[in-house]
Length: 285
Image (cartoon, one colour):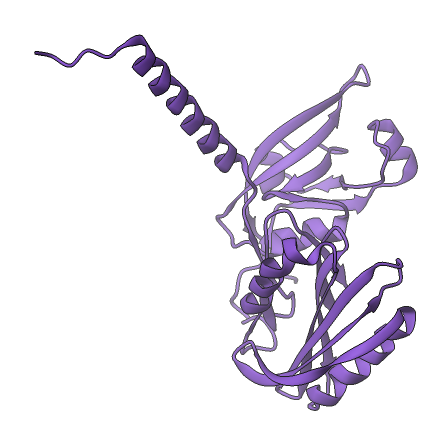
């Protein structure tokens, strides 16, 4: 006798299929992690999905809410142990009830170093934790600073550990002469208040396209002059510097998803997604 499915069986199977498809689509739409490469080719660090990159001159910060991880570099400073203690005390001057939780020997980027931890109320008046881990390599001290309000710590603790574990020192001080530099063939600038109002934005965030290379990767992908790039590779783009860092984290031939806001002739704003293939920047003459 053939097995006959009852109506109830069909309903259960249909619901299960819908739940599977919903979960699959949700997972597919999640932004992926990004590997940040220091422009001077000294280190890499993984930026988790949903976290933002903030270049800090010669350093970089990865943030989500009030939680963060910062990489600080100090040339000609081989004493990382003394440095982390000194930096921690300087940062603590803006805190209240700031106290040391002690220091321990640790490992960062596969090297032996020192970690110091602190607690107190941060500059925003929130109970928070602060940790600094430092190592020295090639006469340069590298300090990884992580911090979070205690209320956020249960949610971000594992991620901060993963960020720290991903930190890797590179051997070369400068990129090899024949190493290709990635580019999308565009120049961008930070948004100003007037431009933001034109796009109907309440916050000044994004990278405005001010120049396009003829037949460059961005132009071939369909990017237009005065487009506003607000996302790239799953990262929210809040500045021109951040877009450049995202581009530098890719290799020529990689495909980058660009989230764009575009003003139409009738002053409406279109939200467009384009795929651009990273090219090779021309060598300086």
